[in-house]
Length: 317
Image 1 (cartoon, helix red, strand yellow):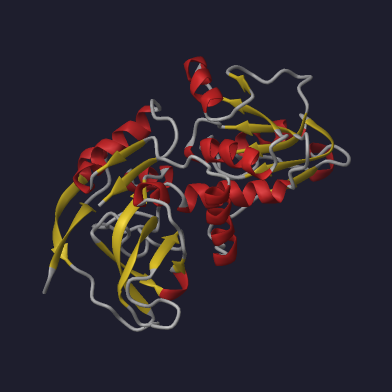
Image 2 (cartoon, rainbow, N blue to C red):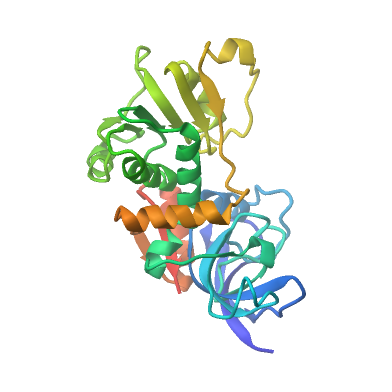
């Protein structure tokens, strides 16, 4: 049996449990195809799983909820021929079965999305979960000319990507981004934020559209900062809260304002290709904040947890 390098978690814990080692390369089975992993992003949900906070996950496990790479063995030669560039993310990858922290990953065919792109592997690895979430949420916000857009959680990977994509989608949008750290103001402006708020929102602040990446912890407050006809997209849970507490739609959604969300687990291959086309046509800078090697995954987790990171961290193999 052929071996491969992978990062395995034997039991939950701090980043030191991410062990770079050799394991058997997966064997293809009906309905699944083998991908040579070229890169993947590091995600907060993988930190939660590593810490043992995903109750359905059993260890040992190879983490990783997203991957970009090429098909090396296929069970669907029409849609997924050998050498086809693919993206995959979400589903139960890295949870119910081994994920992308490896040189090869075996994935269900329905979770593999063939794409055409001229982007580098590092750029492509920064896109799947982060870019698709940002793009899908912004599409749901129905951006219009001269909209005032607020991004809560602007220094996160999705927040950074959303800032860049917002101007690509509608150049006249004015983007205000939030951060808990004033020292990140210059970085946010460098990637396209027109205004930055490093403290609490003023009670009188109003916006046409709000992308709330903090999630249920702040979404009710975000609704109070909408102009008439405005939309909040509560997409993400950076605030560590998964559900609304005592949410009463009639009282908590002001008249003629709207609440929506975007679930990146429902992947539309056409929408994904539209995202890549937008990035390439508008020359959107999707270079990751930092690139690691496979044996440096633990260091990537440490940086993500330190809150000193800005933008997307990726691993390129």
